[in-house]
Length: 217
Ligand code: E4P
Image 1 (cartoon, rainbow, N blue to C red):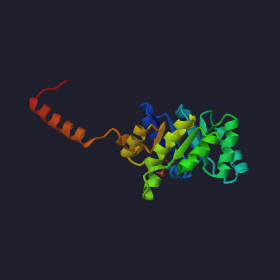
Image 2 (cartoon, rainbow, N blue to C red):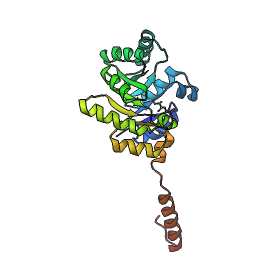
Image 3 (cartoon, protein in one colour):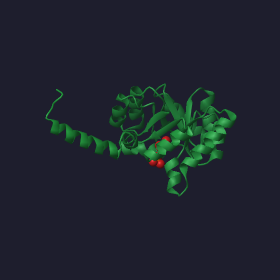
């Protein structure tokens, strides 16, 4: 399973990237706001650091303007994936970008029907938002399961990029279902390495080691 980091915080990406844990990055307008950085500058910095796809999102809502914005974003680096919302205009832009060989991440997906139609429009990635479905008392991971079945039925090559991953449990359920990618904030990726029994076990080992009076170095 590929791990994308869902942030525009360059330092946080670097820490995970240095450990070989970053297969790509996703950003969105809210994450750019949080970073306090200029979209072109920060996206370029991320693209220079990370080998895999870096999603940069258009903000126009009409296809022609989306295409103009997307082409500008694509010029930042070769590994840009142009991110468009799952609207009819977004799908029109997706088709245009895909036809020119650009990677496209179709975002804000909340239904299997939307995922199917995005695959038909040539999306490289579909981003179903797991956490935001949970927020409205639905099970976001059920959607990942439905999309996996549909894409496998017809051998669609669009990758399922499970987004809005808020918990370690989300990540594991998506991995069991067979999502191609998860995108999660650095905090969730780091939390995957933790377990209370690891902390408890280590504490006991250190106590017992102190009692031996020995040193390794
Ligand atoms: C994905 O591309 C989005 O940037 C992101 O996963 C949204 O997550 P949120 O619902 O926690 O804001």
